[in-house]
Image (cartoon, rainbow over all chains, first blue to last red; front, side):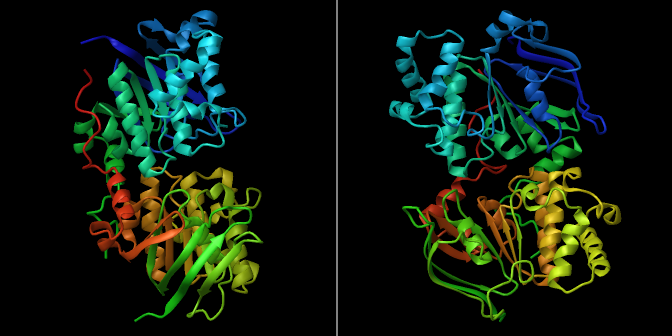
Length: 262
Length: 262
């Protein structure tokens, strides 16, 4: 058993913005291994997106620890933080909002290569072509505007951008929730294939436990800022122990059961 | 046999400046009290159909064919004969008007109620959409409510004049799966009690199968098939419908990963 890639212990976060205090995270602990997908499931407002952002160091927690490959991520600053940052990447729900809308696909992919000093200028076109190929897109797409391509293509470009720094972990925050179902499934297949190839770990944030069941090795269920249940995905989905786990499973539509009395 | 509420014949719609038609040669009928799910992916024309029925298409839109309303005898008046619920209740509710005024206004305008009577009806409706403490809620603003609560308010406003037809356009798509199921049950109950005809526009064919009487499948502006929900989901006539059905991820879909990571 290898050590955890990501180890979170006792994370707390309370938001105060004029109104009443909101506890977004209450003593959250979890572990994620290399090459593993952990599904983070819960209703709106359960704290799952806050947790994802704390892992990315986009939000500072009030307390607790965050260790990444043995390093205390919360203690890192400046150049040391920048060096680790490229090992963690994130893909958001809305790929259009995640890009500068006036940029081209090629420029969007060149940015991380340049910022992290990964590929010299002359090598970038070839590196961009390789990235596009890894996510199943033609190299010719590099010259297209990010607003010109379809939503599914854009999410592939977002994944390619995340892959550019050869990360160990990608946080996927509702990354397939806004896509058409046929497109969504091809993106899920791509994510699984990329994981097989390079041993990536995913923190897969979703409100849909059926989708999580398809891709996650383990699942953590959140409610009101706390993790109320965690375990291997098949076991948790088959017999959820928490009330919210039951509700999440019961809410999945199927063709065999009608919601209402006929 | 119920009377025909809606008869669409050879409907074609093309937006100003667009190359392709948004809808082409669409014909079907809808009986009073029926619950029809209109299913399709992005660009299928499903939302264009909803806008056409509500008379909300932009000016200079090219339209051919006919939309007839035999049971009404006239095109529906928005608010009185036809209520609409959209995906984002944050957009359909006025952010600076109190909840009570927004719901009461529909009753005041379309039912000829005086304001005290209209407010009494609003309070009653807020209770019927199962919002807590309706009397207090009348004075609240939309931002003080959760997404699910706002969608309940939007439903109350849409139902305030007891319209013959309710159109829900992706009304549950922005909600988490648990709230989505609650809102579906609520819609189902409301339209049953009142005999309201329902057009439920969704990208999710499994959700459609949960409670629609019939399902109409749209793809690239064309009606691929329309039929009983049970028939369309078990013996689809169109290969496209079969693709949609196959892309649904349920709790019995084989996972894309196998067991623990290696």
